[in-house]
View 1 (cartoon, rainbow, N blue to C red):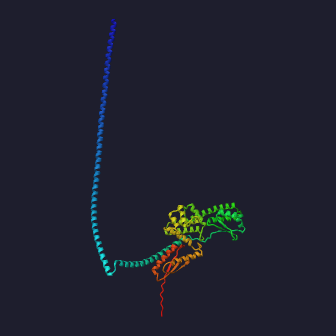
View 2: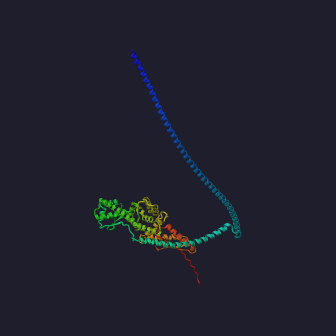
View 3: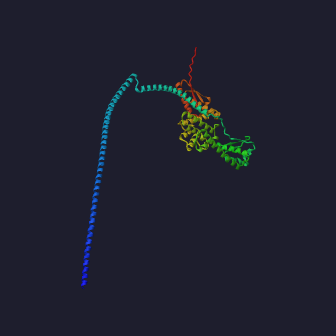
Length: 510
């Protein structure tokens, strides 16, 4: 029992000692941890304070820099404002000086206006006094004196103008005639070519009279088929060994002529063969027209033409005008216009192109109504030619008033080519009518006694009555006659108008 008590006591003492020791160790460890944390806190606080000092220093430096920059900008702004203020002040001073000058000039102008007004009033007063004095001396009022003076001035002016016009015309005529002869002579010399008047071929010769029956065929089927496929009428009459082809279209007439010659050579004449030969001939003629159009454009050195224009040019190969081949006439006109444009400094391309195409309307004038000049101008417009070329084509027969140098050159080239000796045929009736028209125009003026057309219509000589027409009036008469001829007649080249005035004094010795 006693041992148990001592064991329990010993156990209690051990437990108490262990608990005290445990409490001692626990308190000791907590104090050590607290001290470590306090030391770390102090270190962190010191680091924070040092960083705070650095940040404060940096902030002070940055604030000082910003302050310096702001002060520098402020100084620059103040200097700029000061300079602007100085400039404004100078401008104000200049404006003040200008305003003072304007005011001074305005005062001077006002003073001068008053002086002028006073002078004007004084002049009017003196004028009225002089007019009154003149009326008193001459015993004429103002209207009567004015009428007398105007009549005298008009008479003197008319005489002076007539003399001056005569001198100017004489001088201009000499210079212009010399220049024109040079230009036209050079142009004609450079493109000189032979010309033979052509007659449209409308007759086909037959090897024998028997072929007329074969052309007609059984019950006329061959001739009907031929006329149907070609659009050309065949006239079989009593003309020995020949038939006549009649058609308003020269191309179709040429196709019919060539096709008929081929059929006669081949010997096989029936509707199907006629159709075959006509189609082949049409293709051949189309190729020939295109080649001829290209040849003429190449010889005239005209480039960039539309293919349809080339084809229409080729159609002119089978077109004649007064016996003159229109295609050859167009080529010669183009060469003449180009040479004259080069001599005069005009647009060579426009002149030669317009002259080459000036008769292009004749290729379709049997299909389209209207003057061939306007038809050709419309074709050129639709196929992209320039307005200058279109105008020259339209104006070459004065269907449109010519306004450009190139238009007048085309007119001149057309007249030169068509008016050359042997270029065109002219019937006797037309020739006589043209001469009579010239004499009629000349005798339609007052004071004309007689008129004679001479030199094949190249000159008209007008005899005037000397008591009605004086020397100065004859100058006006010559100009008026020439102007009326230009307006009322059509003719190639130019017509010379000569006024003849003769005064005879007769007396008798007894």
